[in-house]
Image (cartoon, rainbow, N blue to C red; front, top):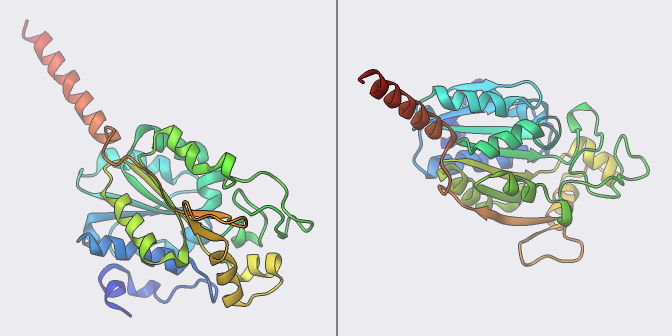
Amino acid sequence: MDKLTDKYLRKRKIPSTACSGCGLGQAHKAMVVAIDELGFDFYDIIWGTSIGCAGRQTFATWKGDNFAGTHGRVYAIARGLRLAIPVEKKLVLTVGDGDAFGIGFNHLLHAARSNAQMTVLVCDNLGYQSTGGQYGWTTPAGVKTDSSPYGMFEPNWVQTEMDILNVLKAAGATFLARHVSMDGRPLVESCKKALQNNGFSLVHCVFPCITNFGKNALGSRNTVNMFNWIKNRAAPLGEEKEDTLWRTGIYHDAINTRPEFSQLMRDKVSEIQRRYQDEGSH
């Protein structure tokens, strides 16, 4: 057990029950490293999770306060919680691609629209891997899955002309980034920027699923092959190649440029109270 695990995570949840070779731990650790490097303690962060591999593996691992939502609803819970907790507390959510970009997308858009302070780490294993490996909202075109044996042919949310991060930018998000889990330091730095934003931040992180994606898409559960397959198809923004699937880096940085949801609500309530008191004094 390393010092970060001992400082921030619950011992009974370590080691993880994730499949052997799963890359989710890389994404999870990047966020914990970012929290530590910014000087936060476990009681400064309230950690929320949802359904699927990402939710199951990160649920109740945080030493501090935790909460979980049903599929796609964690963002709505987080918006309500944002009004109830002290302003200095930070909300961090670890969710899956289906939870964020599928069933929970409407709630995610409203969280971005209202600019509620939360840092959403979308841990994307490229499909519905916890239920057998069906294709999802970010599955690359042509990839064979349990539900697309002839190759996934539907438009997805990461193709250039329909990038989900552009949709979220238009919806009002104030920080957006994309990485693959083996990015290391750049992923940590994006998580740090996201945490420093007093508003809605989202970091989209693709990670390898050995058990189902590797088996179906690559015909092998070889961990090294799976990691290299993702790494070789990712490139920093501006350095893309013909076969690049994931353009990595910071997509949108407008941190602290819009009023944060809970502060806006508190200011409005104070204004209404002052108006009521002024009217009552006449």
